[in-house]
Image (tube, rainbow, N blue to C red; front, top):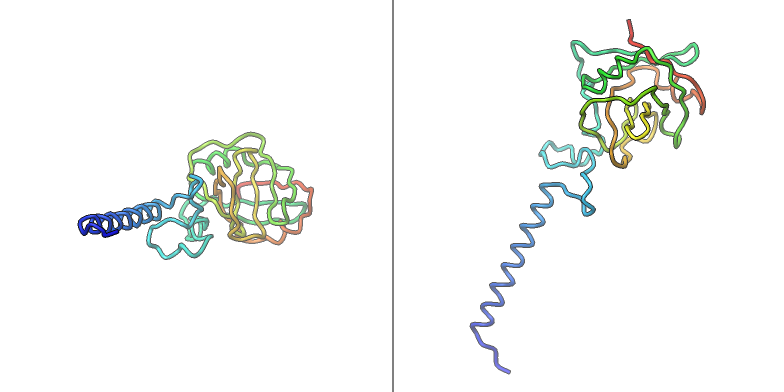
Length: 190
């Protein structure tokens, strides 16, 4: 059966248009960093052009990496030992500071973090992060737990994500070795 040359040209043009449209859609999805299930992208996987996309912990790094003039330093006391941390400057950490000093019953979760429930939920609007970082002090809003990550760098965090609070600067080993059931007193360092 002979083919109409005008139909062949239309098919080729339609095929090219489909390829261009598909490429444009893929580029749009890539730049918006949408996941197939509609969930937000993991931290550090945006398209900011910073070169950190290959490092899943890049965005999870706290702003406390650079010294802050008015940084709030905290003492995390366990028995007669302590760790020292620095809190980020954000609305949730300011609410945490309003609770201090506080003693929190802590445990161990998955051999990577030490969580414990605060006496009340923390308030404030802070962009959540979706990866763990060793040394991270964070807040899990669903159960109003504060926790310290001591292992499992870069692991994916389910929604709603973590609220970054700060970083343990020294003494992370004290927290890691504290066991499965202990009290931790959090206080502003004088």
